[in-house]
Image (tube, rainbow, N blue to C red; front, side):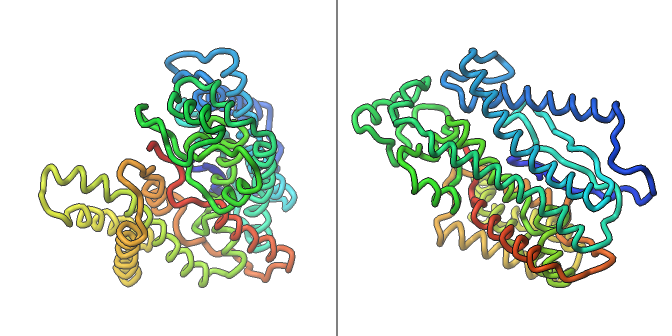
Amino acid sequence: MSENPFQEEINSDYEVISTKEEPKNKPDTKTIIKHAVLFLLTVFFVTMTGANFVGLDPVLFPFALPNTTDLLRGLLFAGLLLGFLTVHEFGHYFAAVHHKVKVTLPYYIPIPLGIGTLGAVIRIKERIRKMHKLFDIGAAGPVAGFIVAIVVLLIGFATLPEPDYVMNFAGHDELKEYVAQNGTYPEHITDRTEQGVLTIGNTLLYTGLASLFDNVPPMWEMYHFPFLFAGWLGLFFTALNLMPVGQLDGGHILYSLIGYRRHRVVARLFFTLVTALAGAEVMPFLNSYLSGYIDLPIVGWIAWALILLLLMNKAFRTDRGWTYSMMIVSLAGSWFYSYLVGGIEPGQASLIWLVWSFFIAFAVGVEHPPVDFEEKLTPTRRVIGWLSMLIFILCISPNPIYMN
């Protein structure tokens, strides 16, 4: 899932569309040209939108063109991010080819917003009937992409300039003043005069790696550094794809590890966790909006409960026992996270988990469809599978990216 950050790779979803015997994995010239055009468009959009993130004097694409320096920095960012996406998708592709499963070339998804792409996706064009084939195709993408993202991130950490490098940025006057006086980055946001500060959510893996290096910029300045930003996005997109539900890579992997019945329970519990995070995100918006119409403290919670009922009904196929019990668990989780843990401060929610709650319920599904032949995986595959689940935990963030 591939995987936007907020998107269908957002990145590696699979779709069963045919079981006919046809020549496999020999794309014709027309098909190759179509995929190449999508790739080149994606390179262009990621370069132009990326220049707005990693540029020293950025402009907002597509309303204006960046200068040559920022254009080159945007191109570097595009190369790093699309390098990760390409390795991820071709990991799936070559695993499918190895198992003689019919598969398309990666479809890159360009968009002139955000980071310039919704990711990339391949399509499996026949039913996968054996467990080990399902596992290999599902795991190959995130494992290969994770390695690339780690390498990119480590290069970024190892080549960090001194903090006074921020003097090259446009704006950031208070930050520059602090760095000039102290020679280090501040711990908290200093310049609150700008319309918004893009803040990247921390993760266990990023925090651990950052602690090994000096001059690491704070999370609200990290997006200016092409290697750090592309590496972080690569790890986070990997985590999104490793969510253990439905037709996502993590769904394939966990299903292969524990089988249909156990995966069904775990996937439903995990979806409930995602909706609990979504509730914590959306409550400040609902309370702020609805308070202008209805002056009741719980009106936002009532509105979210109705939305949650729709999601749970769809996700659990109107299984009333699961629907109502998990609604209670989800609402309790949102309340606990919001009021006892500290939750998400107003104005700092990305709403990504709300989007993914709908995406899982209505697109990829919660439960994984059964394969014809369930078999126990080899020890090596099982180790890789559980390491993949660990990667998910290390690379996910409760509040991934937001405008402060």
